[in-house]
Length: 227
Image (cartoon, rainbow, N blue to C red; front, side):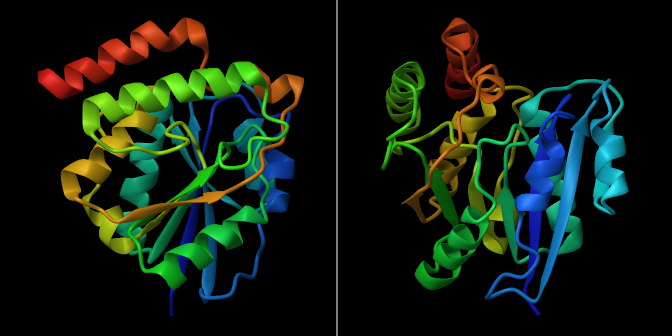
């Protein structure tokens, strides 16, 4: 009886959250049960109410704490649930729900601890500015934590129980994506990347890592490395 938990961190995503949840397959080969949980990070719009109407569990932060804090809550819930696999997925509609099956397949077939869905392995359709920001983030992550990934900022990731039980998240905000790569190195977790295709809209392009936020993220990562 293998259990899969899909964790969706969200902050004010009423525009897209319904279609995101509807896109996730309800039957996936290799697992016997699928549970979806929304980590609502202090939304002030209708996000949690929309999700509750779909009979999906919602865990709420009373205030907006940031992406890192939301993912940490999701990991803690996965441990409590004793999930065999966990998939993290963005709430802005840029991921294809069908890729959840691909990540689960990769975890099972390759027997790795972590699978990263990489947008950069097949970047067709990805805006150049996003490619540039991600490449810069990849280089910084490599220099700090000695692990190379083609898409260190991907929000679509898969973890097995070994990784779920050991990964420790301390970041509160966007630097969490690079912190996860740090955990791969610290824990010597096995991992691989598989290509995914992202759906970019005006809405989703307003989300995620921005060049203007880079200095703050780098500073936070330096503190993690040296303090």
